[in-house]
Image 1: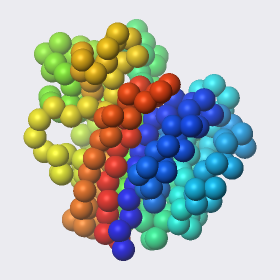
Image 2: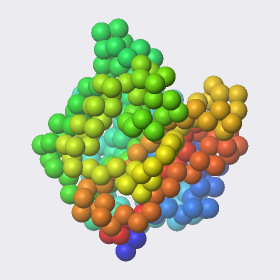
Image 3: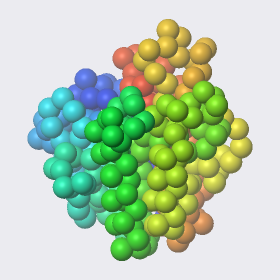
Length: 261
């Protein structure tokens, strides 16, 4: 049975409910994982999602910041919501659909200065990635998918200019090495790059650009990974770049992958 999973940093699910509904209507993923919902779980606008068949929802969140949610049109049970780095800050939730565990992460952005000593936010980001690595070393995942805004563009062709971004948070060597350590610890396969192995590939374009599409100074911050038992059956990956151009958009585009379960 095919299972299509999408991940999207929505940058306020209440503000951008109309485009979430548009995506669900036009693309119909079986599961949609959202990050940066910026809403308490009880105030996520579920009525419209349920009307489209997405009646299974798990979420954690706060007003105005962070927050993760998983919407599914197939039965789903909550697995866990891990308080990463000892903080109850709604950056992880996991559910199980059709025997597949889906981890939804929102890794801290890390601020503007790539120096732990000078920037507490950067230190938090590195600690978060280290805890992810330790978790998956201790509990090797099986039949699992990991998605989310991981806030790291790991490859040289995951950014518009490798040379110019080497000292910019999200593409520094310490971050890319930390993310690779997480991936290796869990035996995860980067499904997006497995299907789209060559060339520049982005999922985020800054709001600061006057014309984001023409400037095209993007980064691939949003990821879909899978354990080997599922990665072999992954049949398609897509980044829906055009969604970045919808009315009142998020600065991220949705990333899709389909698995044979």
